[in-house]
Image (cartoon, rainbow, N blue to C red; front, side, top):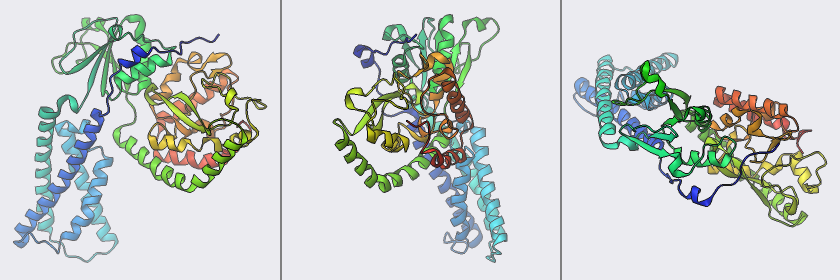
Length: 462
């Protein structure tokens, strides 16, 4: 039986606050400044070392060391997590950045040996420079940490307390959202409710939920699907001790979600997407223009078909495709799966679907940031597996939205595409999506993209 409320009131949507600048954006800016300060500290340290060794700041003979040391250090520090939230803990941050400096120096030494570089670099200059650099970087890290704690505060990390039937006193530094006061019902069968909740929590670094006992399982799924560091408060744990949320807080809870890919991983994935997508759009523009003209001439209606679908963090967005159906037959909610001999599809549309060319406009979804090249395929709100909505088949369905949806994905290259006539058609794809989310790497993205070329034309693509 088809159930689920797909309507949302305009009044409720209007209450969702807009957050154009997130704490994550602020942290990225702080990390960039910190990297620049680290590099300047290394340059200053070797300048002082040159003054001690040569009696002048003009250390031309030894500057070749810095030319290779600085970029290697920046790359190693970036990959080691020296520029991350957890690195703002004094000991962790200093350990990571000094380890990165040591690895960069070791790489330089090995390179010199491998290339049989005969440049005579003063050992006094090198060791004194490294020692001073370690001191300057450590001091600079302490200053940045103090500045962030004293001046940025909530702009650097955003904490949210959600109240849904279990009222508690909010600790200092938390934003509070009362679901009853906002008129939002945490309904797992309503994708619009998920969209509203995701709008409230968008950009939050830590989400703590105080919910009635019968709603905790639902909130656990919501937090995992949103992809945040989420925690559920359990007042009954007070009897055996609590897990403090913040210094001075007395709320007892358990963590239920650990967030999406970290900033470094998301940055790498985004750069990977743009490095391929932008050139692809340039190369494929003539082909897309030809297809657009053919679509326009083949049947009345718009060239593009836009459909509301669920994206990352359970937020709705419009996906773009070349229109392959007759305008009067287009299914905006996707309630009817496309069949092999579907009478809604135009003759041109059948060719576009068979060759996957109808998906080309989604390259612009990637540029806009709503999609990635690789990820779980976004589904229409009314999509059915047999006679059940997707999220009725398995409550884990919402977990696939912890990362961005993709033009292609692990399920597609394994042959799981086309109509979902049976429950297992969805379950096989869901298993692939959850596997991809847990194992993500750039190597896996590149592997899936290469495999995609082998399944562009597919017997189940109709």
